[in-house]
Length: 296
Image 1 (cartoon, rainbow, N blue to C red):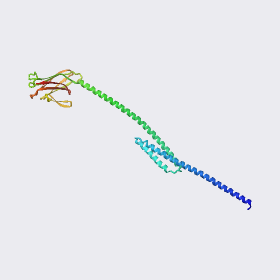
Image 2: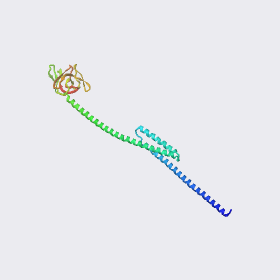
Image 3: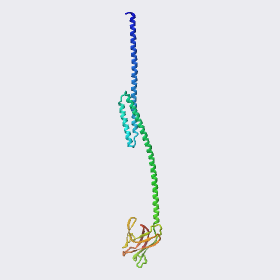
Image 4: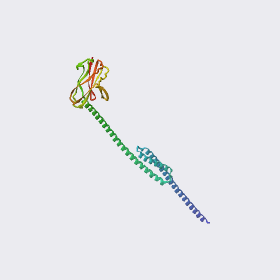
């Protein structure tokens, strides 16, 4: 081999080695770029997983603040929280290079966020309606209280008016005389000589009082004890819900005009004491007069 041929072979070898080295350098650079791109994509995917988990955690906690007194709505909120929990578990298990599933999960998270916003609007609407109902209820209660107050005032006025009417209808006895009569029908102040008591009075005129038949009762009481004198013609009548004794009774037709009325009580043969005797006059369930005399 000549020297010239030897130099040519050497040059060819150098060229071939240079080409191999250049190819190796290019391949390494290309492979490094691909690896860097892959690493960057995996890092981005991992970041997206963490971001999705963070968003789902916030959604889960937000749902805790949305619960109301509406049981049906609370059930729906609970179902959404359960979906969020299941999605968080799936995200934690999905591989970082499963780009397609991660993109699907991003879509599902966005859907859950929209659903939550719809619940927020719904609950806010319920809250506003509740405020209106509370205001209306407060107004109704206020109006009811006013009506009750007015009704109580009217009742009081009615009672007062009825009391006035009742007072206006009441009869009275005036010019009352109470004496003891002896055997000859003459007045006496000696109890030993008294045969009967005579009670006379004027029944007042009253055009608004109830007319018709009325029973007038008298009760004559003994000195000291206040015991009511009674004989065979005595009995009992109702007064303020109780049955009490009367000494004598007279029935008359009352026409609203003033009338002179006398009642008598026959004294029994019993030994009556000296002292003050009092007569009480009753009509229409009321005491309308009284009179006291002293007998020796």
